[in-house]
Image 1 (cartoon, rainbow, N blue to C red):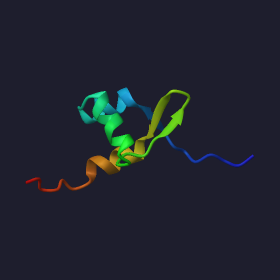
Image 2 (cartoon, helix red, strand yellow):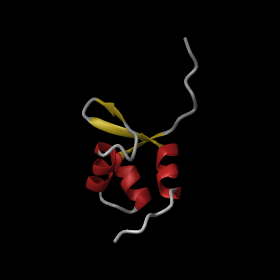
Image 3 (cartoon, rainbow, N blue to C red):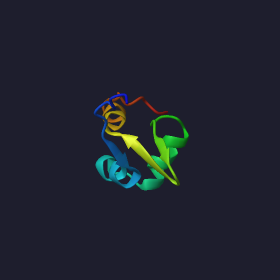
Image 4 (cartoon, helix red, strand yellow):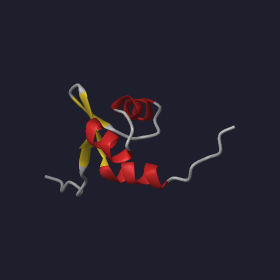
Length: 63
């Protein structure tokens, strides 16, 4: 059996709490493809490294 990499997955609620946004915002990011996620049954799990990469990404100017 192949070794699984040491990846920690977070629930949508955990991601929302870390980012201080609503769960709906996390779902929008997932559906838009801006935040990679894996679907387990009816719920999503987001790799912790993907959340860190999204938070560290530079903010673009809106206007």
